[in-house]
Picture (tube, rainbow, N blue to C red):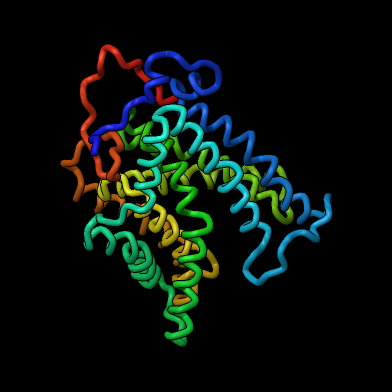
Length: 318
């Protein structure tokens, strides 16, 4: 198996033109533009239906399936995923798409890292929330565990694994190759936040609430993308691992998640942010000797970038 992906032969030889050639030389910019063109219109449909601007009878009336989840699924499957697959193919051809898919199911990251991915955030959040004054709620363990596992699997399969295929598998990985881990995380955080901003049009909103939401999103997304960048390096750039991490972050912070079901009090909100910082710092310390720039290979594990070839055009990740 080849160690490093290369540009598709047609692109490398300069025989392609138009959108594919431009996407191959500006992959991140191409992804962001295409994702925005695809995602924003389709996401607006359930949001407009929620406000009664258009009929909403087509929306499923199922417990737990609300406007936010419908809009999120549409964002992923009709915006982020098609854009990511197109740009990956434009740059690396069919071999690149196959390598991206392999990273989506790359699970051989070691038991230690799976423990960090699955238990790190919930454990830290609960511990810190208790230290901040929250108290434990009595629960019926059996039904609670089953409900939480079901919620985690549904969110992972329907949204997060595909979402991270785009943001981690394409955008953040390519930006890290040129800018390093921290800058790549911060550069990814801005469009990541903007992709989630339409969800704040659901229900009542104002200009002030939208500005507040955007500022909060930018701060939160910067922290989350930095955490994900650290875990990408730790797990050999496994998309599956960071998708599970993304899901555990959501389940540790939303109102129907694991931590909310176990604790009573408001300390968990601050504890969730502190847990991200502590976990990121800890994993960054453990992986501090790993190379800062990696390329994706067809197993999903990191490979050191070779010296640029004089016959292969340089790709601008922007």
